Image 1 (cartoon, rainbow over the protein chains, first blue to last red):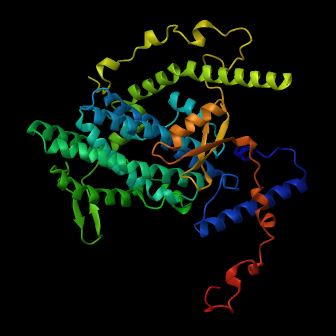
Image 2 (cartoon, chains in turn purple, orange):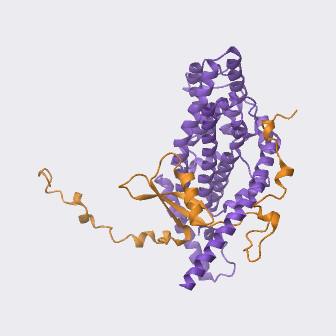
Image 3 (cartoon, rainbow over the protein chains, first blue to last red):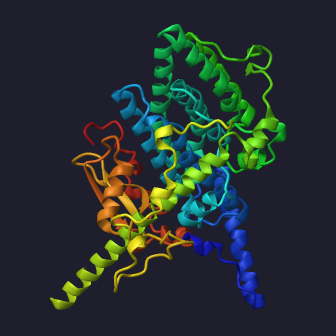
Amino acid sequence: MASQNLQPVPEALSPEEQERAAQLEAEGQAYFDRVMADDSRIEPKDWMPAAYRKTLLRQISQHAHSEIIGMQPEANWISRAPSLKRKAILMAKVQDEAGHGLYLYSAAETLGQSRDKMTDDLIAGKARYSSIFNYPALTWADMGAIGWLVDGAAICNQVPLCRASYGPYGRAMVRICKEESFHQRQGFEILLELSNGTPAQKQMAQDAVNRWYAPALMMFGPPDDDSPNSKQSMAWNIKRFSNDELRSRFVGMMVEQVRVLGLTLPDSEVRFNDETRKWEHGPLDWEEFKEVLAGRGPCNAQRLERRREAHDDGAWVREAAAAYAAKQARKHAEKEYAA
Amino acid sequence: MIPNDTPTSQVPSRPLDSQARPGNPAAVGPRPGTPVVGAPQESTTSVWPLWEVFVRSSRGLSHVHAGSLHAPDAAMALRNARDLYTRRNEGVSIWVVPADAIAASDPDAKGSFFESPQGKDYRHATYYTKSEGVKHL
C-alpha cells in the first residue's frame, strides 16, 4: 500500500506525463507545507518529501530496535529477581518493551518498509539502537536505576514525540508514554527500598545510580551544536525540543527526586543557572558515546548475538504457525468446495 | 573481562537448541504436501499478513482502531491482539481485519471527495441563531 509511494517514476515519460508528475509533486509539496505551517498531521498515504519519509523511517525503526534490544538487560534479571512480586513486575515490564517495539515497527511499516526487513537489518548489525542498552546491568539495583534514570530519560524524550507531525508515530508514542510511567515508578521504588535497607543495599543503589547517570544523560543525543539532523527534524515538527533543552529539564527533575531517594547524583557540577533559567550538568564523555554507537560498547556484541539467537530459535515457531494457517485455509477451502 | 549481565544459568545453550527437537519442522523436514513457508536458512521470515485491530473498551461503546499487527491467521491475530493491545484491561472485545480487506478513500482526492458538506452550515444546529436564549430549543 504505502510502499507504492516509494516506487521511482518510470523513465520513459512523455513530456505531458512529465509535466503532470511535476505538477503533482508541486501540489504535494504545497499541501505538505500547509500541514507543517498549521502544525497538523501527515498520514501514511499523504504525499511527503522523500527526506521526511527517510528521516522518520530511520528514527522510528531505531526506536523500535531500542525497545527490542532494551528487553535484554532486564530479562537477564528475571530469574534473579529477589521476590515473586518483583519477578512478576519485571516480566510485565519486559513484555511492555516487546509491545512498544511492535507498536513502533507497525508505525514504521506505514512508511513502506516491511518489519521483516527491519528485523533483518537489526540482526545483520546494519541498524542502530540506543547506546544505553550496551551497558551491562551488574546488580539488582541496576533494575532500579534503569527504571528510574533510563526510562525517566526516555519519557522526557518521548512525551513531546506524542505531538510528532507523523500521525502513526504520535499515536504509538501516546500508547507507549502511558505505559512507561509504570516503568519509571517501579524503578524508583526499587531504589527507594534499597536506599532504606542495609548499608550494603544502600551502597548498591548508589553504585547503580553512579554508573547509569551519565549514560542516561547521553540518551538525549549529542549537544545541540553537534547534532546535524536536529534542526531539520524540528522544522518538520517531528522533534519539538532540542537535545540540550530536554537534557537540562531531565537533570532538574532528577535533582529533586534523588533527594527523596536519599542518594546523590555523581555530578558535582549540577546547578541551576539563574541567568538562563536552565539546569546545567558536568561534562559528558562524548567520545565514549560515539564508541558505543559505533558498536564498541561493553555489551554490543552480546546484545546482537542474543537477538540473533532468539530470532533463529524462534524460526520453527514462525514456520509452524504459517504451516498451520495454510493447512487450515486449505481445509476450509475443501469444505467450501464439498458443500 | 568483558562485563556481562547474562545469568550463569542462562548462558547460551546453542548446541542444544540447534539440535532436532520434537515439533521442529526444520529438523524432520517438511511432510509431503506441506506448503513451503520461507527458505529455512536465509529468510526464516515468511511475511505474515497485516491485520488491523479494533478494540471495544467497554460495553456500550464502538470498536475503535487500536493499531495493527502481523499474524499467520485470524486466530493467531486475535491472540496477539489480546497480548499487544489489552495488557491492562483496555478491552472487552476485539475485531481483527485483514489490512488488505479495507477499502480507503483516495487521499489525493480529499478535496473533491469531501466537498459536498462544504458551505452547508445549515446542517448544523449552530447555524440557527435567532432562537438563542429561547429555552429548551
